[in-house]
Image 1 (spheres, rainbow, N blue to C red):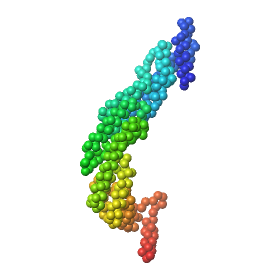
Image 2 (image 1 turned 90 degrees about the vertical axis):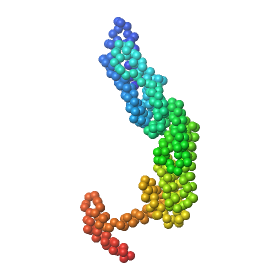
Image 3 (image 1 turned 30 degrees about the vertical axis):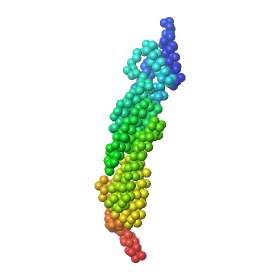
Image 4 (image 1 turned 120 degrees about the vertical axis):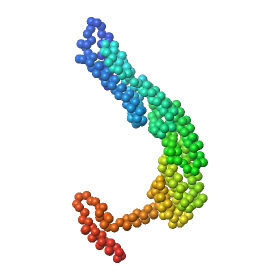
Length: 351
C-alpha cells in the first residue's frame, strides 16, 4: 500500500510540476483524474465510517467496539504516522491538480477522537451516580492508553465520595438494602478493574481496601450476632442477611460462602446435627427465596437434600413414571416395563 500511495503522490507531483508545453495527462495512467476521485471517495468514506462507529459506540456504551475503533485510529490517524501524512499530502495535491474537492468529510485524526472521548467522559463523571455509567467506566479502564489520566482521577474521587456516602447511609444499620449492596459492588468492580489495568493503581488500592474492610466488618458483625445464641430462630435471619450480601456484592461471594459454611458448621456442632432439617425448613419459608438458596448451595444441608430427594422420588408410583417417560426412536412398551418393575419390586421386598 505504501508503494502504491507513493507512486500516486509522485504522479500528482509530476502533474503539478509539468510546464505548459508538456501535457502531463499523456504521461499519467488512463483516467487518472477519475481514479483519484474514486480514491478520494474511498479514503473519506473510510475515515467517515470510523467517525460514525465512534459516535455509535459511545452512544450505546459498547466499550469493545470502541476499543477497536480507537486502536485503528491510533495507527492510521496518528499525526506521527506516515500513512496519515501521506493522506494529508494526497488531499493537498488533489486540489493542486485541479481535481475538485467533492468530499464533505474532513479527515478525523486520532487526537481529535481522543479529545472528544475525554470531553465526553468528563461529562459522564459528573453523572457517575448512574449505574450504567459506573459499569461503563469499569470497562473503559481497559482503554486507559486512550484516555486522559485526569479523567480517571476525577472518576476515582467521585467513586470514593459515592462509597463514603454509602458508608454513612449504612453505618450502624441493622439491615443493608439490596440497592446499597449493588452500588457497593459496582464501585468495587470499578476500582478493581482500574487497578488491574494500571489506572491510578496506588490511589484505587486504598479504595479497594476500604470497601473490603466495610464488607468484612459487616460480616463479622452478623457472625457475632449469631454466635451469641446458636438457635434456629436467631441464626436464620443472620444467614439470610449474609447470603444476601454474597448475592448482590458478587465479588465477595466465594469468601462469604465459606463464612456461611463455618457458621453452619458451628450450628451443627452445637446441636449435633439433629436440628439441621428444622433449620432447612425455616430457611425454605423465606419469601425472598434467599433461604432456599442457602439450603441448596451449602454442604451442611447435603444430607437433608438427599433425603428430601429420596422421599419425593419414592412418593411417585410406577404409573406416574411410565406416563411421563419419553424415548427417542421406538415406542416405549409401558406394560412390559411395568411387569419388569413388579418382578423387581417383589424380589426386593423378599430380601
